[in-house]
Length: 323
Image 1 (cartoon, rainbow, N blue to C red):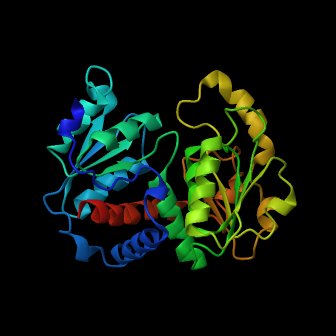
Image 2 (cartoon, helix red, strand yellow):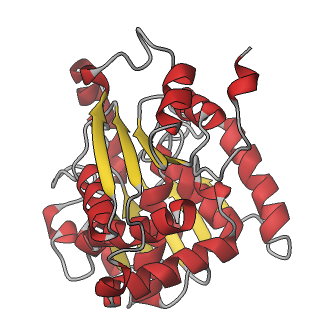
C-alpha cells in the first residue's frame, strides 16, 4: 500500500483552474514587481531545489524555469526522460515519492495528463505542469500577464482563437475565460472528428467554473466552425498555436495543414479587429502556417512579450508554491 508514504498534499498546478482568479491577479502583480525590480528577489528561494522532468522537447520552458530558479537564489536539476528509468523501469509513483525527499518542487513537461496526475498524487512537494496534452497553465499565466500589460485588464476583453481546438493551450484558455469572464471565440475544425474537437470533459469543466466564479455572466465561450468575420470583428486579442504540435507523425502533417489552412490568421483578419488589438502565439511558430509572416512580425504582435513574461510569471509561481 503506497498510501502510507503519502504526506499532506501540497498545492499543485496541473491546470490553470488550480489557482483562483484572485491568485491569478496576485501572481501577475508579483510577476510585474519581479520584472521591474529583479534584484529584490535574488535570495527569495535560496537553497531551494527544483527538479525538472522533460519527456517532450523544450526551449522557453526549460530556459525560463532554470534561469528563474538561479535568479531567485535556488537551483534547478534538468532530468530528461531518456536519461533514466522514469515510467519504464521505475514507476511514476516511486519516482515522485523518492524525488520529493530530495527537492522542494517538481515541474514536468510530458506527453500525457496521466503522468502529471500521478506525479502530483504521490509527490509531497508542489508539482507544476509545464505542458501535457490537457493543459499548459504556465503559458496561460504568461499570456494573461501580457494582456494585463497591453490592455490593462484580464477580464474585460474579447479573444478569438484560431486553429487547433483539440489542444492544451486551447483548453487552459477556456478555463481562464470561464474563471475570469473574458469573451472567447474558438474558431477551428471542431466537426472534423475527435482529433480536432474540444473534449466534452473540458466543456463540462468550464461550465462548472463559470458557475463558480462568474455566475453573473453567461457562458463566455463560443465554438465556431466557420471563420466568419463576426467571430473576430472587434476582438482585442487574436491567438493561435502551432498546427504541428510535438509528436504529430509526419504522414499526418499534410492533411492537418489542409484542414487548418482556412483558419490561418492573416492581415485581413487583423484589420477587422479592435484598434488596440494584439496578436499572440505561444511559440514555436511557423510563418505561412498558423499565421502569415506579416502578422507575426507586424506591429500588433506581442509573441516575444509572451515569451519574455514566462520568466517573470514562473518566478512568481515558484515563490508562491515553494517559498
